[in-house]
Image (cartoon, rainbow, N blue to C red; front, top):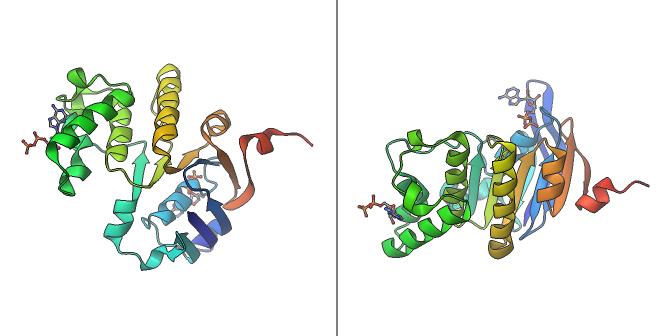
Length: 227
Ligand code: ADP
Ligand code: ADP
């Protein structure tokens, strides 16, 4: 479980994130929702320590993330962003296989998993596995990014606007595929979004942020229920 305890990030004398305390339930998707500039990305990047908090703590299964080795953090937490940054000189399959290869996993098994994951994100393996990133559309590249994060098989997946570059139809499809994958893999997932429809659709839970603080936390039903 990921727990944020009085987490803060200050730039100059302005708080990007202020006194944020929140737990992300295990094996569920939590949508971190809020308007642009409210501190979502900063929060996400403090979880995997790409940004050093100014105060407070991130606890991973009760352990202070500040004390974990960077390698342990990277192994345990997958990170998907809109500009996924595929390696341009590697094929799609090689990009997806990057982490398993680095970890020295069985090659034949990785090969099968790569094909499985490409199919899951809606890219026919026989067509796409040997393509280079330059030959892909933005949306296809994003799907490869999702497959690559899943191939690493981390227990936690942080996703920053992962479906942002997709057109509405592709977006529906990839969201649906991701939900199906999640039903099988049951990762602890945090999805940053400024889109309330996406948050309500994807989130088992929704954490609503406003001006660097938590405004509300609950299930989609809790969130839309009117008193
Ligand atoms: P969101 O992801 O919700 O759009 P961010 O977490 O990116 O919001 O940013 C939160 C606030 O912190 C914004 O006001 C932004 O301008 C500010 N901010 C983010 N990064 C920096 C930085 N490196 N230096 C100064 N201010 C920053
Ligand atoms: P090597 O030649 O050193 O085995 P490759 O470039 O063939 O390296 O493969 C690198 C990674 O990409 C491996 O993990 C492999 O499983 C994966 N890979 C390569 N080609 C394919 C393919 N056609 N289908 C699925 N996975 C592939």
